[in-house]
View 1 (cartoon, rainbow over the protein chains, first blue to last red):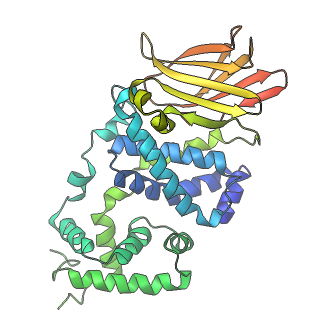
View 2 (view 1 turned 90 degrees about the vertical axis):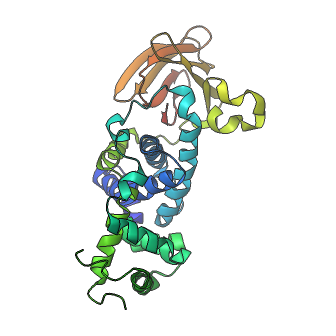
View 3 (view 1 turned 45 degrees about the vertical axis):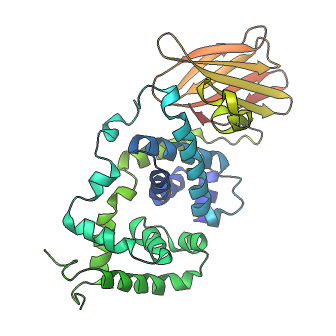
Amino acid sequence: MANFVRRAAGGDESAWHRLVEDFSSLVWSVALRQGLGRADAGEAVQMTFLRLVENLGKLREPEALGGWLATTARREAWRVARRGSKELPTDTELDAESAEPGPEEQAVTSERAHTVRRAFAELPERCARLLELVVVLALPYTQVASMLDMPMGSIGPTRARCLDRLRALLPEGVGSDD
Amino acid sequence: MTDPGTTDEQLEAELAAAFADLRAPREVTDAAKGLFAWRTIDEDLAALQYDSLVDAEEGAVRSADGPRALSFHAGDVEIEIEIVPGLGGRRLVGQVEPGAGAAVELALGDRAVGLTADGLGRFATDLPEERVTVALSVALPAGRVRTAPIRV
């Protein structure tokens, strides 16, 4: 990942695309967690990656990019929330998107998803965080290791253990066709 | 007893589906890819020094309702801009100091707008209603000063 940062800083656009692909969901999820709606979260993502494009050559620890982006996303989400109503009458940008159902309605599309979310909420904090970063947001192991401050070698085993815990929290039949 | 038929892969697929809303929509990711065009190799970008949205807190009373004000600094040069309501929408008004008569180039989304500062270094232009990325570049006798890109 440090390599992609260096290449993007040097002008390699495909490396930039890779960084955005790998990290846009992390930034988006942080913005949602700050309480933003989908249109505002989209704006916070743009602002966060604009900060990244401006700082590509200055990142002191490119291997800790995930942590840097999460921190920046929280700050930019806050900025968007403050700007909110006072500057623009409506969110004209990404309008089609804001017409979609919000995260809550949309996520619980099925009984099964609801069940999985309930079981997930019962997990210990550390398991929930790891599974979210690795499975839901599909971040590279190197980034997860630095964000959770754990050795990379223990991510795989922890992931398996946390999945076992989740499985134990689920009623029978989830995961099979029902 | 838990279902022995649920493999790790199946369970992970269930988990990913249940939290699909946490993954960035395609159009958001694609828009962020386009921001690479705003990369600059300038070492001395005028950095954002003040943004009323973030920094007005200390001044407490005035904060929330005024126009958004930002200022940038590079060496002895200061650039201030405000986003104010205009007749048909929003306007950007600014001042570069020192900058009497300077040529100001405004990158506005994917457009470029050329402006000339007046005798006091002031300039103004209309902004689109939708949020847009903006950066300024001012030609001064000592060289060109560019601001970091911002979203307004």
